[in-house]
Image (cartoon, rainbow, N blue to C red; front, side, top):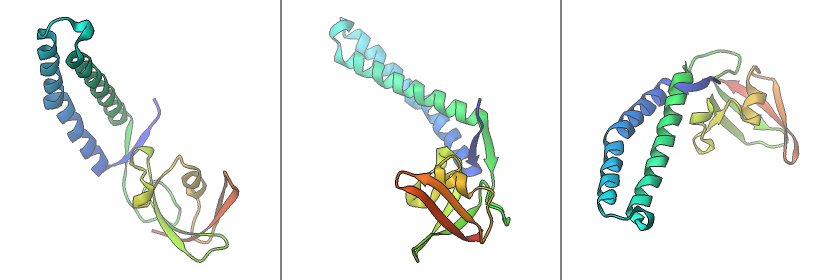
Length: 153
């Protein structure tokens, strides 16, 4: 099983979601299934098929959260000169003036809009292990992308 890197906050969020899904949400779907079965002929019972589909999605999400929590390695924000999981890097694309700030997180928490990139993304992989003043590069769809590392927080 591959390790999944998550923050303490994300772990707590997933544990809360897991409890909710395994409790009230699952019970609601089971009740809907029982009601749908009571309507009779299951072959043409839309309510039954809908409830079964919802049950499948629910069980899939529960299994995914369970797998993440079992493989979870908690990362903490820390101060270091080298970029690693939990680090925040200020980078500048070569040939431009604008800088961007990204925090390196596990794939479950990646969200570009919030400045959180996965350690498994091409940019994340290029940044990990580098320090202020280094250049990180990776091959993208438009060719080689190069970024100067302005700061590490």
